[in-house]
Image (tube, rainbow, N blue to C red; front, side, top):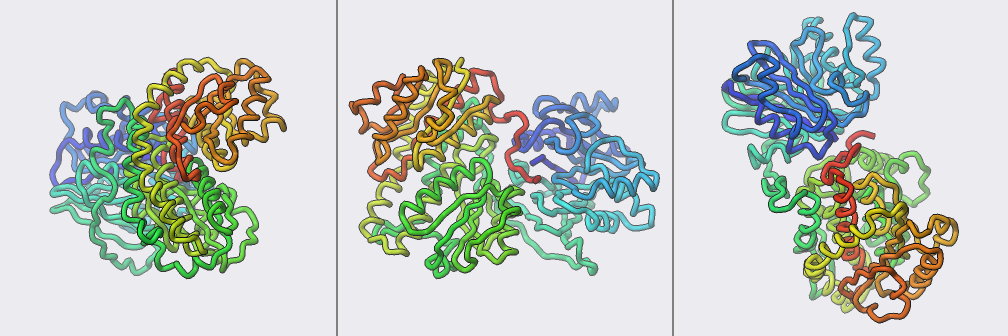
Length: 630
């Protein structure tokens, strides 16, 4: 959720610009405060600010504060904070230090037992300056150092006592070319260059230095040294023998320097909306066989027998991923006899589940693969004996490692906090997965070939739609910029897309939005319909089109305004002329594919609506890209 960077180098140099640039690369993970700690003259100096590092963290101000004409250091660490314990403030910003000012710590995650540890340390004479759970960590390390432990031993003993999730980077003034890092439930990766060794919470911050990373697994600690040449030593902090783990680097997959640049676009979100034809195409590539009408999902090959025999699927996910999973439920139930359901991951752990274990697949959907609530749901499902699978975007992520099998989306790096291309990439996987299940249950070859014939063309159809939609949706956002109430409405498979549109609207505009099945309007929500309201109705010409038109009449009869999103084959159909504006999408033979297409105008409408309000599109307030705390 927050962002961590730590650099140790073999020769002293000004690392501050590198730390600031890396923190800027990580801003999408949270940015209500930021800070840097570095060595100068054998002492640790700490500089903190409120707000985003790209705007408020400047090397010139750091030099000015410490009266330094230049900064030459061999170790520096930095942190972007998304407040959980304690309000955004200078005192609560990371890095945090111990009483003596010799230890600096940057931390992602949540320490569940911090209150008890803090009381213990206060009774031992430690003075705390913040409201955070993190501050106990440098003090606990200091506490063990007082007992004549080495720095590494003190870090190990500290991590053993922490309950919850953490990604830690620790610096000590006695080791000016060394960093100590540990991981449990919060992402942390290592990068090595010719003269430096780097730790970060995301490969996004390493891609400017190297194309190779060494990922850490939960329960591991690493000592990063730049004394002579950059080296790392990995072990488990719960291993009393402290045995070294051999692990070589692996190429960073799915991220390039271009991915973390806006290019010619004004925001990352707009860039990522336009990248969807390419990301959907990449996700589909090589995963189907037109001749046989089959989906080919390598990550599920070992589970073909199990998946052929299942009668239940339970999707666990959060936010946008939950909406994608809800579309997946509709697809699967349309093509097979499987009973599918979606559960919010944060609720899954606390509910009783009556699914038969040998007949049920639990499928986690997550962009980052690090979503704490979804990860915990996967672990709970595993403990209860269910087979678990993942649909994630990040290779080697926690959910990918925790599940029995799964499929990677190929959306590439998604920087905008409000997810766009991850949603459509998840849908692409779910369309293939549903086909696989259907073919194993008797779907005829010809039907499979027809299905795939249109699915493989969807990237081109998306691209065609994006030629005209941006201007049209901007115009509509301008027309309706003063509405007081907005609802997104649909029936059947389109309800989940309406839910996604409402979520995007709330994320980006900071205004409330409703989303309902059209049939529910008359059971309560129609009370808010008046001349100041806007209803965005999603109703392409499918089997639900005629009844959806009745709902438009109901809205208009109460004085409400309607934007109808439908398909080109509905042109001239009686009834749609009652909508105030109609947005036409390419007509599809396979009606199940409409969610892939109809989300585009909704994303663009919300985007331009938020722009009219002057919102920060890529970094909406209070939100973070990867929610790694519960």
